[in-house]
Image (cartoon, rainbow, N blue to C red; front, side, top):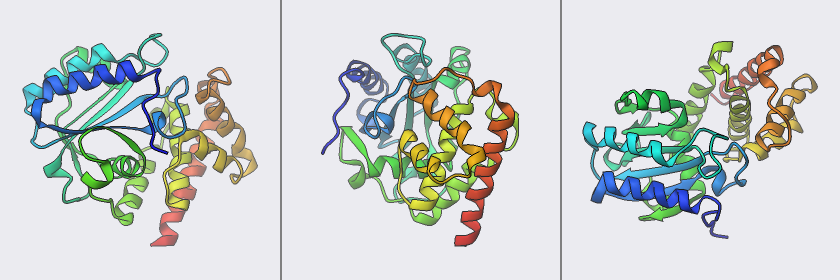
Length: 265
């Protein structure tokens, strides 16, 4: 069944599209909605994930204006009754077709950047290993808002590059400072990475958590179940007060995922 834009976010998606078209103009050749909105369903803390493809590299002035404008059509999780948090990634075709890893992103907007953007600080274009995961997800399941279907426009990511990207992502979470304040999202991200590294597909956060809960060793289930429940809006946020359990889960998940890569090498 072809996914459709959920009614609850359709106005915000339309606003975001208008902002992108205004600032990117005719260079915007494709726009995709992916993530929870089309795979697994929106939950209280779900972002709206958008992928924009351009046929030329946006100038620094365009990037600055676009990132600033997106602030008005996004809100931090739980801060607005009308707006969800947006995550918008802008890629230029020439840097992703043909595919090479790591690919370059032109710009990325997210609520974690709000303070910097309000201060006028915009990230420069950069190589981003995570794009291998993002593009695999978009090609697998996304809704085309503008342009050609993602599977037709975007080159497939080779399995070896996807595996490398998964390992690079896992490696960044080593100390408590790396996940402080973002415990839930990182626990669920590890569940998704573990699923992909084992099964080869892309699963939603809740589905990956369900899959892993049936397999992970007993000492680590409670913290994973708590992360899942918080994400679904079924439990209050408590993970920040369970740092020992969070650290143990992350260390265990990282070790097991890295072992999978070593086994397949």
